[in-house]
Length: 74
Image (cartoon, rainbow, N blue to C red):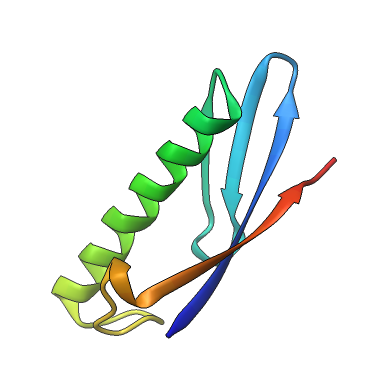
């Protein structure tokens, strides 16, 4: 099982969700929206890796990944 991390931050009125291992950053008008976009982006990224069978997470589907939510980062 591959473990990834995620955290949230706020920039003005915008919420930003980040997964550092995938160098993925998303935003939204609410924390939930930003996290929803992050999960979608992570699933798309991992699905593309699974199809290519290359990269640092070889052949991993989104169901095989656990995400540790680290909370808010200032």
